[in-house]
Image (spheres, rainbow, N blue to C red):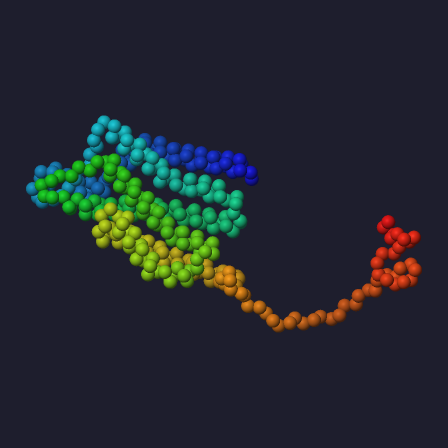
Length: 302
């Protein structure tokens, strides 16, 4: 395809992705209050001031209230909730459009792998997002406990939604790590044995990433993010080892590096029986030399 055709194809794919996101965003705007209640319910149950600041302070408990400041804040929060809902719930559509744009440049077996990667990428991303939603109450309670006695907390809803969005993106992308490792293995870039040899470095790196990515940094929240990623990492290593074994079974030289020579077979093959060869036709003059017959200095074709 020429460049203009590729650009038109990209425009069509982008338009379909944007329309899908907008369609889900409209649904999110219609059910904005229900979605906002679903997002804030774990926080209210964990640190909500059901009895007010005064009574909670007298009892030595730290709590918080979710508030909105200004007349425009409810409208801004509504747009933010709707757009976040559209991006997350429409992820299967725009991931498929991305694959459909890349598919014409892939071989048949690569298309099969691409479908599997897209099919696995969406559940992994949604699983990471749901895990962020589950550990949100623990994270909020840990942070609220730093409040001095007698003081109250007001949590702006728009700031709270920003925290949720960042956690959803971080947790969702972190859950894509095993998929990236499998893609590198299927592309022949890294082997399963090498990935297994990196397990100490990977576990420490995942722990450091979890400590930085979680807002609180407490061991419980950090472990809630690190433990599933470590399990998914070892699952990805198992898939890579199985793929390497399958590849060696089909091609015994698949594990050789580019500068390593493959073994050569020096045993000579058996020579078969000698086949008779017909003698070339003699010339009209009887000379017997091979070649086309010539008459008056010209060959037959002439």
